Structures are given as structure tokens and as C-alpha cells.
Image (tube, rainbow, N blue to C red; front, side, top):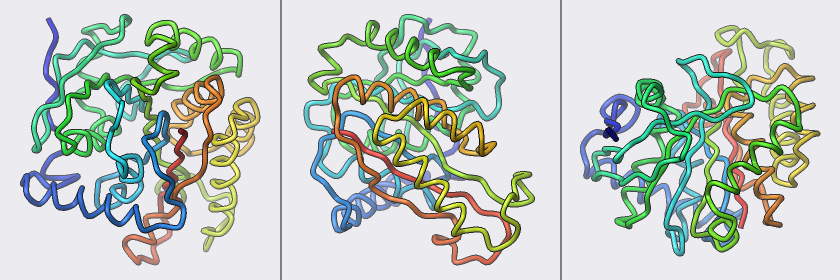
Length: 284
């Protein structure tokens, strides 16, 4: 039986009140249109952040600046923060839809979806933050939710990308009627995350690392991006999903660019030692 995913983080990670949430979504999208990096969509592939919307809304919004256009289906792929997953594979659960304060989002399901992964899909915040933006479009777009842990080798990325092309349909990916979003925050830095290679006041070095990775991903240099993450002992939590999306975008000769980069310190104006970075990458 297909199940509904509840809006587990409404009221904590983002507003539960529909009017407040719709205003947050609308204002974030309008602000995105005014940025120097704005390029008209619709977009076919993306890497978007997934922190609470106080932090991530401005990084998610660029994907929605042109509406959803020809998009009929969106596959959202995130890391798993709470469940242990096998490497080199994607997991999903059969859903009938996902609830949001702005209305339900109808689901489509991957052929590999298994009920045993439902609790992991339900509890994963990295899958939820983009859903209010989709619901706010008042469209008939259907959404599949999936998770991936990590890749052990570059060949596994290409193999899994090929499997997704076969399952989702090459023609749907070519025309953009099916879009894919990788949900990933970038470097988590500080004692809280056990990652302090640059000591204190490390924002500049972290930004340098993150933008290097973001550009490798946007250019489809997947093997180099995987090697970079491995060498840096990267704390980019959704790097595997981002690698997979980068590989797919390259297959379809999509043009990618880094549409945004900022950190939690930019949003909160804090001087604390711990911070998380966010980057938005879009392909059309």
C-alpha cells in the first residue's frame, strides 16, 4: 500500500501557518530574480540546500524563479541523516503523496521503491524542505523521494545514472518533463561537526573549497569531484546525490552554473565557531 508522507518539520524547521509559509516562499523567489546570477529557467537538474527554511529558502528559491514550465515529475534525492543505507545504491518507498501546509503533493514512484524504507523517507528533513516550494506552484507535478548514502568509486556513479535514465525514460529527461534535484548542504565546519582543518576564522578557505567542488559539479567533472571530496574528507552531506545529478546533467549536455553560495553565518550574522555552507547549482 502506498502511504502519505507527513510534513514532519512544519512548525519547527519552517512555518506551519500556510499564509506565513507562502509569503516566505514567494519573497524568496522574487529576491532570487534580482540576483546577478539569475538565468531564466525552467531548469532540468539542480543541487539545492536543505537546512531549515530560515537558512535554505534563498538557496532553494532559484530553481522556482521561472515556475515549473514543462516539468511533470520531479525526483528529489537526498542523503540519509538518520538511517544507514547501502553504498552505491538509491533507496525509496512507495508513496501516494507528501503533505505540506500548502497542500498535498502527488507522488510518482521508482520501480525500486520498497515499503521498508518508508520510516527513513518520513524522517528525512533533507527531502522535506523543497516540498513547500513545489506545493506553492499549484501545479500537477508529481514528486518521487529517494535517498543515497555514498559512492565507493566513480564507475558506480555512472552505472546508477544509467539505471535512472532507463527507469525515468530518456525522452522525459531530454525534454525536461522530468527534473531531478539533489538535496545537499555544503561544508559543515567547526567543533560541533568534528571538522576544523583550517582552525578558526576559516570561512575563506571553506568557501574556496566549496566553490571548487561546486564548479566541478556544474561542469560535469564527476570523477574529479569525487576525488576532491575524498581527499578533503568532505562534510558536504549530500555529495553523493550531487555527483549523481552532475553525471546525469552531463549526459544530456546541460549547461550548469553556480547560482548561489552563502553560509549560515551570513544569514544569522553570528560569530560562532560552527557554520554550514550552502550552494545552489542549476542546469538547463
